[in-house]
Image (tube, rainbow, N blue to C red):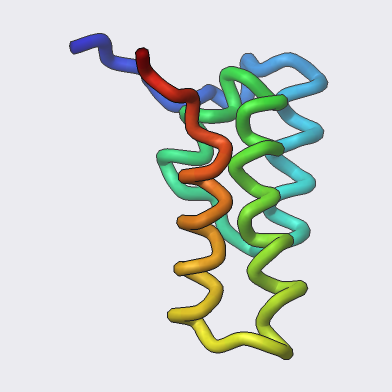
Length: 82
């Protein structure tokens, strides 16, 4: 299995630093998984959109309903194997 190291903020590109700073400003923390995803800022933004969806649904749905809705979206978007 391949091992990916978290990004090093000091040597990261401006694009990666900007995405890192945006995540800290929005959510106040940066996990190791997010630091690894930041090797691709686009991948990190896609992952982070789940939190945006959750925040939009929170006033209407409880946590379990949000998880079930998210799972339904993921299953619908999953590629079909022949």
